Image (tube, rainbow, N blue to C red; front, side):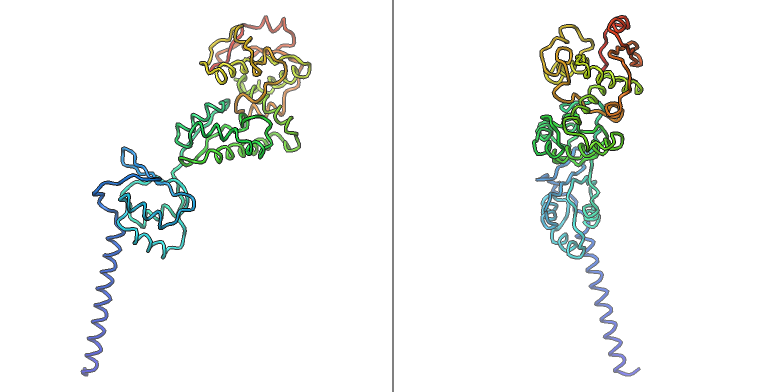
Length: 355
């Protein structure tokens, strides 16, 4: 082999060695900065970042926040080793991190952490809203779940802009927030919670209410109020439409609705007293616009969040000439329907629905 060929071969070997050396060096650099820190000192909490006693970290990526800002907060908290390596990853990966709340099980490499924030796999809270619940109780459920504060939720439910958005005549969104199971991030804007539930309400209403958009706001309010009362009265599904028919029959002739549920609403939601097991004469005589024993016509607004069965009953009441119904079997919640007051009195003693 000539001297020139040997020199070329030596140069190639040197180049290969340098490439391998710098490749190993670069790989070591990547592995070092990509690896999570040893948490010494321990992870620090900060704005938009909290740590549970078990070690689970909750990170909030704020709306409009840059990847550089997130990297700085992660470094300051001790979750990543270097914000500059985080910036480098952000330059190579053009996909944006997503706004939201994330549950992080540390330790996490920077690559894995970025993959979570880019995917948008947010930590969501499951909140089940039961049928027949009131606005105040609903607010407490969202607060207990960490979605939003009860006070902020109630304030959003009274926001006039939201009420106008859905053409609601009442002073609050009571009755127009559909009872269902929802998934929301922690510390979610209460107005967006309200809109999600109201949108769900009108979507469900379209399924069995027909073209409700043709109804005037007054007529829609009337039917939702009836549905909210039926929701708190019925226990057996097939009786819901009969109850709605009774209420419409009473309204038609100017007779008081005399719904126990409205008296319970006055006691628990307006007066703030415990739910009664039995209603007495003194209860049905409480002076309040929501008390349909002493005030003819509908109460000022809905008294609960009606579900599908009650809403369907209010939009499709059973045709009958019944004017009364009374609980006669508390174990299953079955009622006796009658046309006359004498028949109604003979049926059974007055019961209040269970909690």
